[in-house]
Amino acid sequence: MDPAPAPPAADSKPSVVTELFASLVVFMVALPLCIGIAQACGLRPEAGIITGVIGGLVVGVLAGSPLQVSGPAAGLIVLVVQYIDDAKAQAPQYEPAVLLGLALVLAGGIQLAAGAFSLGRWFRAVTPAVVEGMLAGIGLTILAKQFYELLDDVAPKGISAALAGIPECVRKAFVPTPESGANHTEAAVIGLVALLILALWKPLAPKKLKLIPAAVVAVLAGILINEFGRPVFEALGARIGPAVDDHGGIGVQRVQVSANLLEAVRPVFVLGWDALGFAFVWKGALTFALIASAETLLCSVAVDSKHTGPRTQYDHELAAQGAGNVLCGILGALPMTGVIVRSAANVEAGARTRWSAVMHGAWLLLFVLLLLPGVLSRIPETALAAVLVYTGWKLLNLPGLWHLWKENRFEALVFVVTAATIVGTDLLAGVVTGLLLSMFVLLIRFSHLEIEREKPAAGEVVLTFEGAATFIRLPVIAKELDALPRGLRVQLNLAAVQLIDHAVLHLLLGFQKQYALTGGTVTIDWGAGRGPA
Image 1 (cartoon, helix red, strand yellow):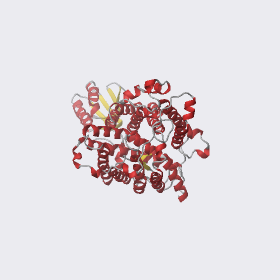
Image 2 (cartoon, one colour):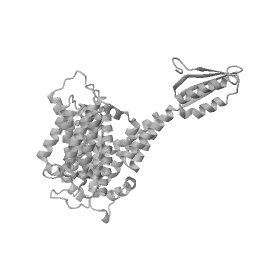
Image 3 (cartoon, rainbow, N blue to C red):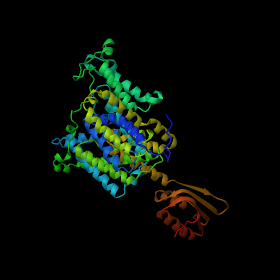
Image 4 (spheres, rainbow, N blue to C red):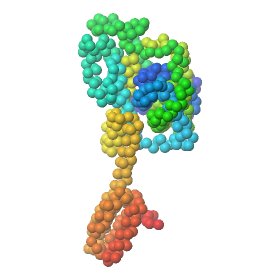
């Protein structure tokens, strides 16, 4: 792993050149991700690009985290897909993309209200194990689904079935049969080349070329193979399928885009507002607001650690994200969050102000206005799937789980349970389960209490308590006190107790009085500056 870059010097001055250069780097990182995330959600590529534009031109100006870049996030793919499935099942009379817009308007309103009531800091209270487990569950889900896109195949329904079917999917790609289709091998070659570039570009690329994002190189390689690879595949005896459009190529599915960006806009105001009566709309809005806010603000913490400039204003950032999601909802785009990959690229490219994030939105807008659909329509879908498969693998973060296991096994358990629940049920259920489990683990830690019994002299007993004396341990404490013989000189040493709640305090004072009636004495050593009022 490459060492983390040193934070920019506090006295380094921003310049137009550095901000312009950083914005171009972020633009190159953002473009394939905007398209790929939209494709993975089952929506048109333009929906992701519009979100990227809003993340730059609107949220970039309003942001409370100046160097953070906002846009569509891989972490929200699962949420969008689940919401669209619910929309199709429960409200088939409405267009799912428009219902998604309604949920985003509501989610953005929740974020705006949370920012106005200074709730931003509370989103940071989520334990890192839950966040990492959430990202791992999302990563595994993305990997399972996008692996089939990588091989130009159709994923079975359900994450478990998708994971179990991967070996057969690979077999169809490299040992094709007449019934397996004609383009799996070609898609597999493009996808494999793209994955190798994504994994090896940063450590192996020449120093002068490292600034070009690996995702851009991977997508360009996919375009070249698809455009000019037919003679090579035919020479090797591969069964080349017919071209899927008038561009020729080797027949692998390409990105489908409209000639006009405005054609992709699905404004929410065309929707009858009676759709607010659907419970899944409100559940989706709340889920989008919670997950997007937590991911954004945790990303802000990570971005702050990479530079020495102005710190994040969390409530301000939350409100900016809310404004962005409201606008995304109105225009029928994807939900947005602050995203760490683009934000890290922004800092590493030398950005010092918010204007690099703003300009990256302008580059996205100019690109789609001038070059859409000529360039985008040549991108093989398998190359974008490779970008998302690699992203899913990074989100899975198995090295992080191993480190957590060595450091704290309870936290590792929270990580695994959160991820497994997301894969088995849905994202919101997984996060709630992880939070409840982390609270239970915290409760166990706070309730840990050790009682050591000593007899320093005849007729004397010393009970030393260490830990937290709470009502959860009340039966254990009562049992230890009841087991003391009568008529002794008893000392209760509480100096090493971090917490004594009212229930335990009442028990100890009551025991002190009752034990004196048996002819014994009880002395309580409360520790420095402690004791009953």
